[in-house]
Image (cartoon, rainbow, N blue to C red; front, side, top):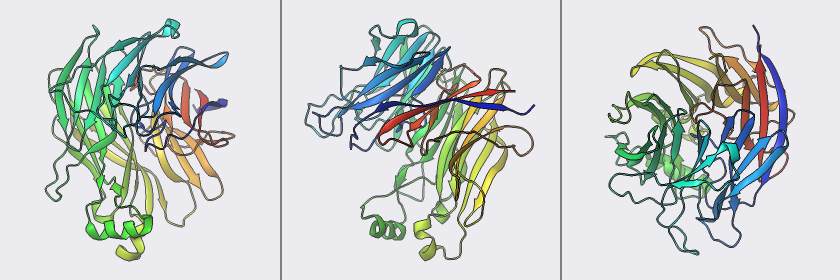
Length: 431
């Protein structure tokens, strides 16, 4: 049966002042800031504090939407922070992660103390319970957390970076107890003196099985390319995302992550990879999505003359750490007609059907969203009839954050009609 798609809501949540601290409301794009519990939708937004200086010049806000529209149910007055706050659901409990600074007002940066605010969704306006995750070896956390928070509806996995070498890990069990786990050490690269730091990963937790998908986030390692880009951008640094890695453990509470598996590598052509999403199905198959660009357009004419720039949406499956199959779902060749893929997310319907929500651009159409069902053949993409589609990063009510499979897709991004405004759209999928 073809999918029946209805755009029910397109609206604004909140307008904010730019914080100018290098982050933003969607900076945690491997996790999510939106979750659905029944008919209620929750979004953790950011508010800029006008009397504070960067980097820690924000605090998190919690909004809830029901039939009466959006309402602010909580404003954090306990600390200042830099980055957005990923959320997860545990049944009737909503957990909002935070990373409040320990630095004095006026200081540029400094140490931080991760925290989790636990709300009762039956009455989210009641002050939350503040929980403290437990970490091994007292990590030197700072405002640059690059944190990841995921849940399976019962337990929570929390990862937070320190420096460029590893992520520290904390686990919350069904009884509500936090415990420290061994750090996750990034892949080693013998060809470079830089560790392959992985930021903004997609992580899945289910019955203590944990799966990690992330892209290397490092300073340009090739001196000639770094120099060429510096002359273009005027910056002394330029971070690149070219190598995609996966790792998993069958029992996060008792076994460390296994060896790293490299799924894609565009180092040789100065390409770009953006991880999109990760899903674990009922058969133990891991589904991975990412977009990639074959060559950096700024370097192509000088270093790769004649090379076509190809942008594609890639899909890969694994089971028990072994790659099963890989497909290119959408492929766009430079100067050709057709949609250019930018970002894609998985969405699971109540009956278990796995969908892909893709964001594209076209010469005449601008930003568009399309949806397709995963099957053995090439997916059939169906346009979503948005009036004002949001461009750039978007986040959804993913089951990786404890939201239940649903016919509703809740999408949060930046408003296309009003600057510095967090937007929201609700799409209903039926048969």
